[in-house]
Image (cartoon, one colour):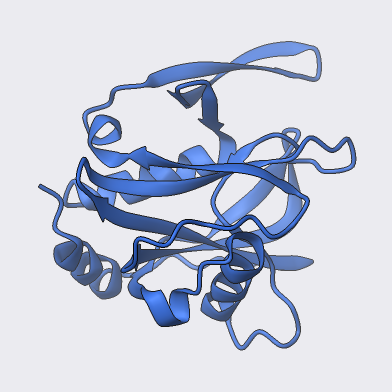
Length: 194
C-alpha cells in the first residue's frame, strides 16, 4: 500500500538538491500520481515525432521551460501541465513536494538546462485532454510493478559510434529512459521510504 501522505512528508522535510550552476534555461515537470481501483498510477506523456525536438518520441512527464511570468519552478510545472494535458492541478491536485533538480541531457550532452521535478496527487477522475501538437499520447502506468522492479529493461542507445545499454522501463512498448527514467527512479526511491 502506498501512503501519499508519508510521501509528501518525506519530500517536504528532506533536504532537496538544487542545482545553482549557470543554466541557460530552467524547466519543470510534474510527476502526477492518482489512485485508481487497480492501485496508484503515474501519468506519462509520449512526445510527438519531430526531427527538430531533441526529445522527439520520448516518454516524459508533463512540463517545459520556465517563462518570465512564472514565479518559480512550481508555477512552471503547474502552467505547463495545464497547457499540455488540460489538467488543472491548482484546482484538482494536491502538491506532494519536490524531487531533486537534474541537468538536462540530450543526445549524450548537457544542454545547459536545469529541470526541477515536482510531485502531485490528482484528486479527480478527469482524464488528460492533450492540448498541444508536441504531445502524441498519454497513459497511466501502475506504480506497484515499478516498485517491485518489474518491467526493467535496457535501452540500446548509439552515442558517438558506441552502443550503450541504458537502464529503462518497458511499459507495454513505451520505453521510459534517460531523464524521465532518472526522475521516476528518484520518485520510486521516495515511495519505498527513502
